Length: 374
Ligand code: HEC
Ligand code: HEC
Ligand code: HEC
Ligand code: HEC
Image 1 (spheres, rainbow, N blue to C red):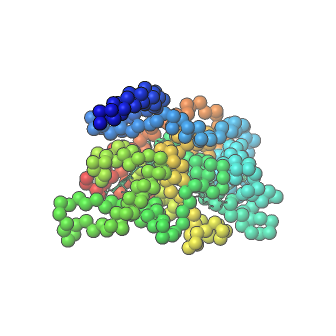
Image 2 (image 1 turned 90 degrees about the horizontal axis):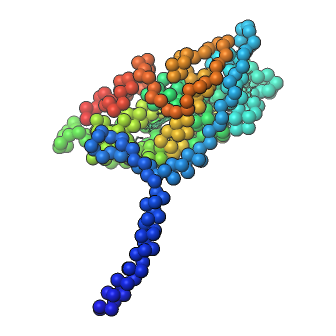
Image 3 (image 1 turned 90 degrees about the vertical axis):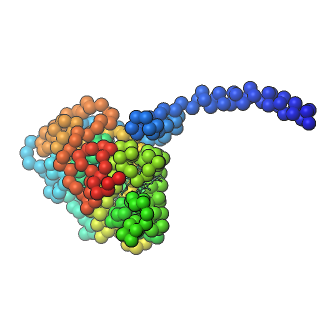
């Protein structure tokens, strides 16, 4: 017995330096940043492994902005069939077209969206509609809607076509109606993620949420976590998932993200059903729709918060950019010298309420959406 214990002790002693080395190595290499996300004293913190963040960041490719548009020739706009971008100078217009060719088509080829014999046409020489151009026109409106009407979500970071398309025609996270995607309809036409009971005891008129609804809420939440590459505690205090007052501010941002996703799916993406060729549609004939991962691609901020859109006034959709007024028709866009870092958006009072659900007031981060006293 004794000899066995001695043997074990000896082995442990012999292994100790190696063990310490291994542990020491880990402690030495793992550099973690801890960021406080909740109120002071509640120990709600996010840990970021620096190496992991650096590796993920290295994977994100952000195209350099094109050189600023030069002076435009004087006179009225030369276009014949421009319905959205008729408020920017001709040079800025062509600069935006050039950017779109690499952001979406990937190839830099105008022919992806155009009948090159006549750029104004919406049809091919054989009279068939060019669906890519028709879709792109709606995408221009959608991008302006996102940047212009949802400052409470996209802040001054905003989005360009590249945020979703990443240099290819089909973005990530496209979804269609199937049995498996029922919960994703929360991002389209269904409500009711709130399932936690607010009553002490079951009552006749109390919480009627079913097990199925609760499963949908969890599926939705796992979906949001994966889309952003974060844990539940990025948006919740795990001692009370339902409570808004105890949640970090990111949850309110996320709620505006849900309202925005409903808007773009309902009013922009789903109605394109009749424009796409059949091959782009789902099994039930519905158009491809977007979700959180379509913009976020696994990062807590799309493209880690790179402010691409500030270089493209044609996509901004708001009459301000960090206080610099939108240039509009016929003027030269000056080179932008604003640093490439995320800055909080100024409080906007002109935000349209975009869904029937109550929205939070102004940019009141951390406030509780009306209608749920929790
Ligand atoms: C991703 C699709 C897409 C790509 C790629 C694209 N365009 Fe366009 N283009 C459009 C759309 C959409 C319009 C109409 C915009 C509107 O209605 O506001 C348009 C309109 C135009 C017009 C205006 C024609 C008129 O008189 O009505 C010109 C000129 C033009 N594009 C040039 C180009 C050039 C040059 C390229 C290649 C560098 C290019 N486009 C690449 C989608 C595209
Ligand atoms: C919020 C994300 C998002 C943004 C921003 C966005 N798109 Fe899209 N786009 C989509 C989705 C989703 C589809 C559907 C994909 C499909 O066609 O199957 C799509 C499809 C397209 C298509 C058709 C592709 C094909 O071959 O079927 C074109 C062209 C296009 N977008 C152009 C643009 C342009 C130009 C911009 C910028 C002005 C833009 N998109 C911005 C999400 C986005
Ligand atoms: C990106 C932010 C975010 C992340 C990450 C997240 N949630 Fe949520 N959660 C929300 C928002 C926003 C709502 C309210 C949704 C609504 O009202 O439409 C919510 C609602 C809920 C609810 C319903 C509360 C009620 O009132 O009944 C539960 C439960 C929940 N989340 C659990 C989780 C769990 C578990 C995780 C991790 C798997 C998670 N959440 C991750 C933002 C998030
Ligand atoms: C149209 C593109 C787009 C879609 C779709 C989108 N987001 Fe975002 N989201 C953004 C942008 C851009 C930012 C960066 C804003 C900033 O700089 O603070 C952002 C920021 C956030 C943040 C704040 C992150 C932080 O650390 O401050 C959360 C949380 C978030 N999004 C959740 C969601 C959820 C949940 C969904 C799906 C319901 C969603 N987003 C859908 C574009 C999008």
